[in-house]
Image (cartoon, rainbow, N blue to C red):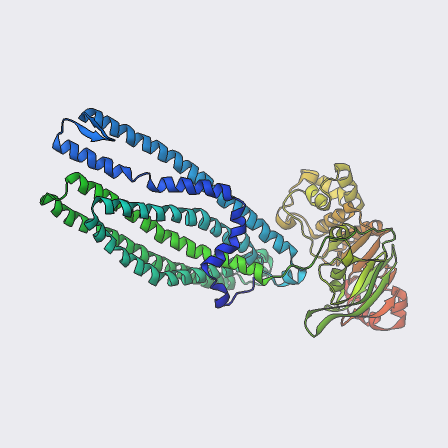
Length: 606
């Protein structure tokens, strides 16, 4: 994610809520129910101190009858009535707590579900240009950690704060009604807490923001180094990486400790305020009982009510800490939406219809950075069923050109046609259904081999999966595995060799039965035996398909119908292998410099 400036990060409170409002509106009914339940929970304990006052005054005075709810009751009947009232309140409160927790969690989970889904869909809509520079750890933090912080803000933040705020108001009204002089003493302690809150709140927010930034950095680094563990070990960098993680973890530790110090200071002030208020109530209230201006029951009722006032204030302090932490996460999510622009990959228009599978690039130009073109007016016609190899030094523009065909990137100018249809005027889904891709870095997902082969066609039958594996020379090794096609490949296919991975990827492409096939360095990372099996499979797979091959190995390039040589984003030479070698141009030099070193066999013609 692009780091936002401080001004951008400091959105107003109302604006943040406004961005969540569309999600909340979808659950307005549930919000209404939980609001009503929260209101009841906020005031349900208020009668208890008044029952306490009645019991103490009646027991100490030893009256023959006690007035309750407008009726005079004998002491035992009075106590029994009080007992049933308290039991009834407890049962009602238990029921309300159940509904409040269940409904608030339901609301939070539904909003977070929709927000996470929107965030993921937005991520999926971004171009390959974004993913070239994105860090997986940071993206995972947005989708999981930041989203969960927003959930805490909704369930343990807003709804809890609403209930506590109503409780404080209700208790203030009650203590004013019981004894307004003592109430003013209690209320005099509140500005101390309010002043501390206003003073420490900005520091709490800033420390939370810095802690989240350090956590994001650490998460991204760990993700990167765990994925590249082989490289770390191969170059003996375990100690250096351990030191780097130690420094990053230390910075995160320090940020979290600072955040805890600020939050702890605010909580400490709240607790001191509570203790001070309670001490003043007992001192002054006790004096009023001694001089007869207040009954013992009234003092106990007032003290119980005052005690109900401060726990919500302490929770509000913790809620504020939760909110400030979640606000940083919400800012980062909103910034991600604001700072990244979806690629205009509309899925409107007619579906692509492929008959011949003829592909035409007309004056295609593209730049990742302004004034630094990667493709320069590339024009290329590929006939249906033709195999074309794209060769050139790294950075020549080969993969970028193919990414234009897949609409991973949009050209700055020019157009691309398939059977005379502009690929940017047809449905994107229909375009990609017509193209199969096998890349150098084979990506398999956790699950079985069969599930990975079915990835593009989940509805394919077992027979079709087996046939795709046979065509790709993958069936023999798959059937030798303990569970065959049901064998778990583990994360990123770590249980399989490079050649096996490539053949599974090829089977995945074959199962889709695309009229156009793209092979991007499909055999560059396998041994000679695996390459032979893959080449044999490729010969069968490419038959009758329009195929683009990006490769360096002679065994793949030399048998192409046509070889296209690219240099600095332009096509500089075209022809068959023998013709280009005989011409002695860029291809022969490239062939001599690179391709001959990738084969152990002498090459005829040089």
